[in-house]
Image (cartoon, rainbow, N blue to C red; front, side, top):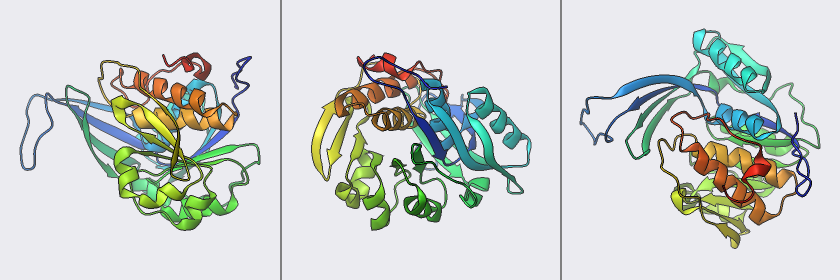
Length: 287
């Protein structure tokens, strides 16, 4: 289903190519230091993976979303497929394979800060062989899948291409030049100086908001709404979904950035990586 706003226009279709994980989250009073054991945590099993988080967020924001990815033919894989479908995501092109479903081990403290270890599992098998992309579709990918898949997307996607360059690793020049939008946090931006050459980069600064850079020159910056954070695990993914949908729909840079920051801020007020969200246009005023 698409969502319309009389001033902002309709949201378009989005294809998310990315990871699908089961998140094992331990909530503790504080994060452990190296070699330390912290007692008193609670454990949750939730849907996750940067790709799945972004697909679910985009669908809940009002986009028409399909997901390209891979899960294992196991209980977790079936659960993740059902979760995508229930969120309104077309999961018919998610590969069901022999490799176990990817798993993320997450520790979250009382302030919402986290530590994450990802075991890729079936995400290492993601491919776009046999997948077609329409010129009117936006495509959003991340780096929790094989880099060769991202490189292939840069070669075959005919329309708007957004790359969430996370986790940070060097991107080929061809990918940076082809991407219509790169999305990184401030740490990833510092670790990937080549990103400054991209035509458009969205950089997030946590509670301080986000900025847009065109070929390394700042063109927009907005603050983030002040909220009480419960978990920051899904904030970046919600931001990615929102800004990709907004820019693909033709929203101006400031409206797109402000809306995405508001979506990201709302997401940290929930413990899960795939929080409930409203129609994207309702976030345009930054709340």
